[in-house]
Picture 1: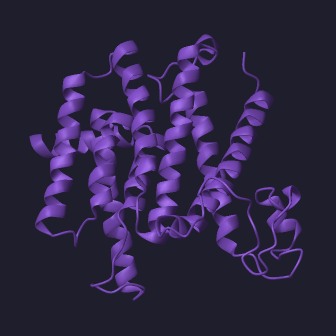
Picture 2 (picture 1 turned 120 degrees about the horizontal axis):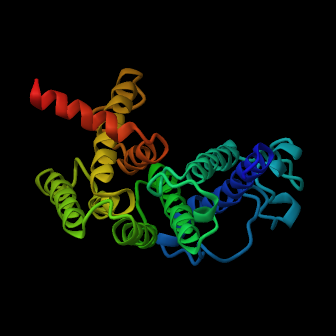
Length: 288
């Protein structure tokens, strides 16, 4: 039996995991421009340093969120201000993984099975690892595309691999859908996004979105993946109207769509009944 104390400790562990991964995402966001421009800096190697004085940081200056607060948002060596986005990203990713831990613990991502036997089984472990890796890729894409208007291919590949594992589990062990339906969803999403990119000549949609979006049905499921994209367009429309109304963006300004895709995916993942509500709405609309 899972006690409330165990559940709270479990969720705190997920939050800490999110903070750690958020710190790594900060590294990806910071180094990515130099990496793609051939600046000789690797995304995965080399020690972190202060952006102001360039001093390499020691381990106790790199504790996610804690170092930022203990050092009062300043570098210990030069006193330069540490950008607030580092803490915001770590906290945001921590909250995302807190939600993910609750989702996995409730079993809502694996056919609603919640027994302790399943939680300790190799299949459940594989499912959890696929979700962790996939959500990490989604979160990294959210912040990199938001900052640099670019979706890295290696993160799309990671998302695809984790999604493929999820698809095999759904189809082979829980028979939630068929490979045929999944293939139709993938093809439909690809053709839809490719058409937007092609006919707008890349102005309405970047090709990174064309490569990224078709893997949503693989990771989330044939129908939930399509609903995630539906939510993405609605979220994008609402945010765009707000940006235009507040004059933070103009009609000719670019707005990356990757973050909206990720937000749509998280809506489906963390609000289990979201897809059911939309599906019921469409049924009502058809029969009205």
